Image (cartoon, rainbow, N blue to C red; front, top):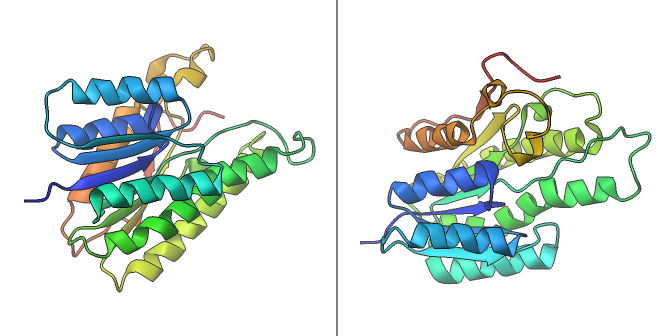
Length: 237
C-alpha cells in the first residue's frame, strides 16, 4: 500500500522544517528543499536515524531560480509519481520601504516568495490529480492582508501569494484538490533571536505545522480556505 507523501519548499528551518517533521512523525514520505546544504543534510539525517522506512528526499535548491525549482519538481515527481500534499513555504523577508529599498530587492523577494510557488505548483499539480486526498497549502502571512511599516516588497509578495492561492482554490475545485492559505503572524525563528522580545511573544513554528496538519485532516467535503494564526497578544508592530 502506498504511503501518503508531502512536498515542502524551504524546509531546513522554521515553519517548513516543523511541517516536514509533523507529517513525517505521522507516517508520511517527505520531500523538501532548501538552499543551505549543511542544514538540509543535518535534517535529513535526523529523520533517517529514526529507523523508519519512510522516504526522505532532501534536495538543495535555490527557489528563486526557475530552472532549479523545475529540477526539484522533476526529482520529486520521479520519486513519488503521485503527490498528496504540496506546501509552498519558501520565503524571505528583507525590510525596507518601496521608496528606498536597494535595487534588486523587489525582484529577489518576488522570485523567492511568489514565483517559486507559482512554478512549483504548475509543475506538481498534474501529479496531485491522481491523489484521492490532495491538498495544496500556501504559507502566506498576516502581511498578506495587512500592510506593515517597512514591509515594502515583502508585503507586496505576500498579498500576491494570497491572491494566487485564491485563484488556485477556484481552479482546482473541479479536480477535488483542496487549497488552503495559512497566514501566520510573527513566528519565532533565529532571525528574531536578537530582538530582545521573549519567545513567548511569538508563535511556535510547531503550532503553525499543527494548523496545517489539522486543516489536512478535515473530511474531503470540507476545506479551510484561509487560516490566520497570530501570537496571543496580537501582531508585533
